[in-house]
Image 1 (cartoon, rainbow, N blue to C red):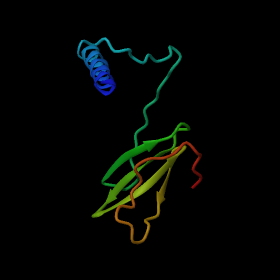
Image 2: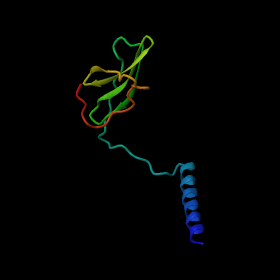
Image 3: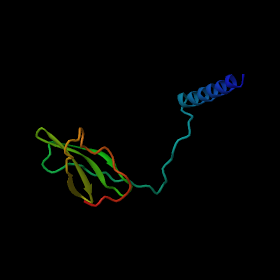
Image 4: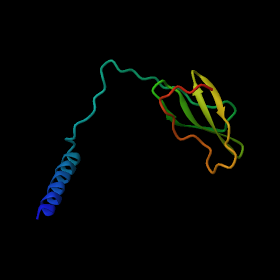
Length: 105
């Protein structure tokens, strides 16, 4: 009997949250009035395509670039692009994110 009540309680909570979401009444995150953002073009020199895949709190960016038929990883730090060496034998040696520790090339 208790399990039924717990499951029913979870159902009710989920239904209420779903209803709030549908009607746009969910609390939203507001940005501080002092927040400012800048956009930076990410374009690895000589590449035919470049894609950023991660950024950390200090603004370092990792991603992938393509030259010819090969894709490689990079670190963008202070406007300087540093290629990330491929790992021999890896299936997918491309970076998908970066932690908040400062990366030194």
